[in-house]
Picture 1 (cartoon, one colour):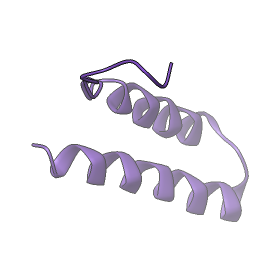
Picture 2 (cartoon, helix red, strand yellow):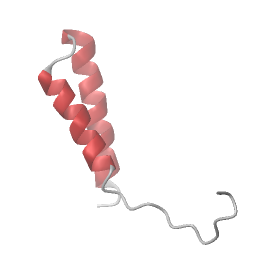
Picture 3 (cartoon, rainbow, N blue to C red):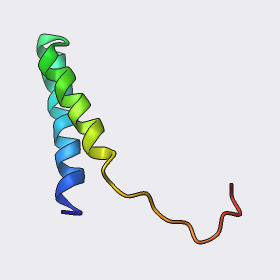
Picture 4 (cartoon, rainbow, N blue to C red):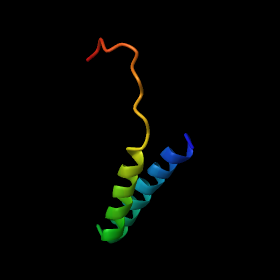
Amino acid sequence: MAIALPLAVAGARKLSDVIEARRGPSRGTRWLRQGADTLQGFRPQKKRRFSFGR
């Protein structure tokens, strides 16, 4: 799962870019991009031990 999710996100973005380059923007490419954004948000944030850099 840790490997499959980022690969799926990257694949959806790449597919959206290729389709947009050939046919122009459409509803399907917008859905692919939004789906990739949604899936990317499911990854847990890295926990920092110390917050010195903030």
